[in-house]
Length: 223
Image (tube, rainbow, N blue to C red; front, side, top):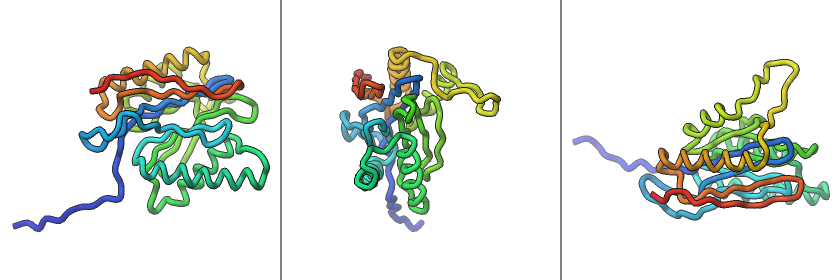
C-alpha cells in the first residue's frame, strides 16, 4: 500500500481578473468582484481594488489573504512617508515602494499579482504591472489574474503601443478617450467572463483624472 500524506500549502488562488489602462490625462483600473477557491464561490461581492494614495490605485488578484497583508504594509509605509515628507506619495514613488515590498519577501513571496494605476507628476496616466516578486514595468495597459490570458491578447490587438526599442521613444499612454477606455474595459470583462469560471458577478471600474476619482459598476454573468 502506498503511503498517503496530506499536502498542506500556505497559498491558495482565489482567482479574479484585473485590468488597467493609462490615457493622456486619465487612468482606468478595473477588477471583477468574484472570490473563489477551486469550484466554490466564496463571495460575489469582494473588491480587489484599493486606493493607496490620492493618485494611486492598486488592483490585485491571486491569494487574497496575502493581498490584504500587502495592502496593510503599503498603508503603513505610506503613513510613515506622509509624516516624514508632509505630502502624499506620487504614483511612480508608490510603484517603486510596491516593488521593494514584494522583493523583500522574495523567498516566501506574497502570492499576489498586482497592477498599479494612477497619475504621474505631469498629470499623465500611468500603469505599472508586476510579478509576485516585485519585477515591474511601466506600460500603457495591463491585465493580471485568471482572465489575463484571455484579455491581454485582446488589449494587444486594440492598443498595442510601439516597441520601446524604436527611437525616438513614443509615449506608453493609449490614444483612447476616457469613455472609450471604460467601454473597452467593459468589453474585456464581458468576454473574459464567458470563458473563465473565476471571473464574473460584477466588474468594479475606478476612473482617476484631474478632477478626482470615481467608480462605476457593471453586472456580469453569475454562473
